Image (tube, rainbow, N blue to C red; front, side, top):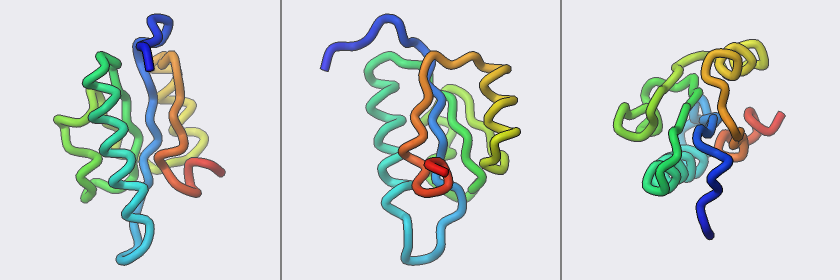
Length: 97
């Protein structure tokens, strides 16, 4: 897929806390999304409430917010970072709600 030049910064909503044995696929898919998008040259902003996940590795995103995944926090990050796009699908049910 060709790169869109109207998008430079993408806000990715992480999966948050993971129950052992459940939802680790969201963490994995989010990590892979960060890697792929950065390889394409996009600036990645990540919000995730789980500091113990590989997704919050400083190498994966240009800026990482370890904060509760709430509407208020997401609005604050959007105001501060001014992303061109939002990718909520990596956060599982929390992000989709």
